[in-house]
Image (cartoon, rainbow, N blue to C red; front, side):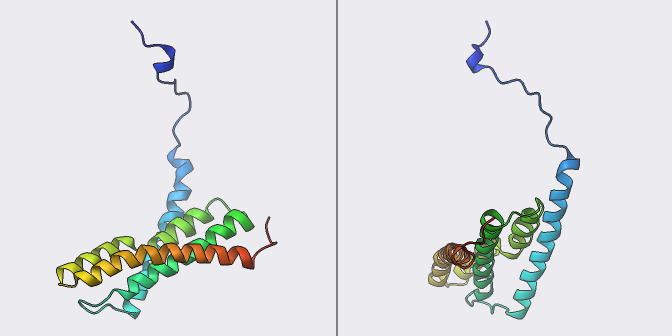
Length: 151
């Protein structure tokens, strides 16, 4: 007995993407990630967090990175199309390496373990709210400023 046509898996005729086609994207994301991570590290050296202190550097890096993401996405999707590798390089690579939501979670854990649960909870709530607000405000402002310059 065979399965009805509607339940059979579709025949696959297309080949999966080859490494050769994906290599440029992987390369630009890697390069961009290195640039972004180096910039974040420089910010942490410039503005170090004291033990048990509020992680201002991580908060401001995430807010700034999210604001830039808002501007960037409006510019490349609504104002002017970009080369296909710009978005993976800058959006995923540079800004993905610069913003650091993994450090955000480690900072929360350090605050809680250090007996600063209230500060950790405030930081837990403030960061995503501030980051989302930054994206929203930056995208909206960019749209207003660049109004009429669409493709």
